[in-house]
Image 1 (tube, helix red, strand yellow):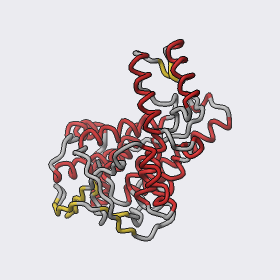
Image 2 (cartoon, helix red, strand yellow; image 1 turned 30 degrees about the horizontal axis):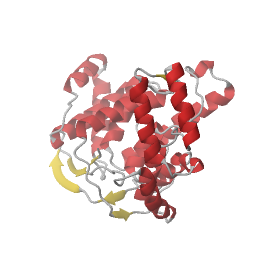
Image 3 (cartoon, one colour; image 1 turned 180 degrees about the vertical axis):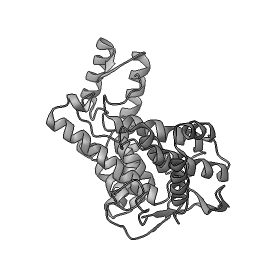
Image 4 (cartoon, helix red, strand yellow; image 1 turned 30 degrees about the vertical axis):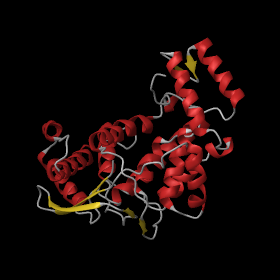
Length: 320
């Protein structure tokens, strides 16, 4: 099946570019951790302007490694490296049986894992008859849903594997993946705050907001506002991935209004974190290009804003 994003949903496209790039850069082997130290949740955070103060962060602290560092601008930061929040091994149905009671009891980590597990099963046939009907449709149309299939044989093999993995999970439960991810995000799990905007509900979308019906436009704008809200929360909690995402948003002017100073500041802060953590890529060439377009006063403002971002006492949480 050809990979693709739902037509016209700009937040999904931009988040996929930012976060998939981040995951490809930082992803280690997949250690699993189970310990959480919850902190009190705060209300949703809204950005009130390009130089709004950093909000108090919400955090769920797993087992992690912490390294003190001083970035180029002289600010001391804590490089917090968190391991991957992997699903339990084995069939999804078995993991579902273990995760559901934990999630229902309020375990935010289990809520995140359960939401991701159900997302994997969201469009997998729930019974054998539906499976065979979809297999036949792939043979006849070389499509699975909206997406063209390059190799029906490989696609069918994947579908049968997914069916076996998800068999036993109630069909109605599979559609609740966003509810669990939201619970986890609201509890302060950074990974959930970053991932929620990419876990889109299975609905119709229009390619351009200007061509949407009023109902579709309102729904897509609501999803964009939700993406900004949760990504802002993750940034306030120190997420380096959120800095990257918001840098792209400010530069592109699609999800957030274009703001060259904010884009420069976010990329500048990110570049200093990358250097301190000895990670790639670096953004020196991109920043040099931005400097050519900015006035000296704007560069000074961007540098000041970058220092503000780096001065967040929760900076800097590196998640795979």
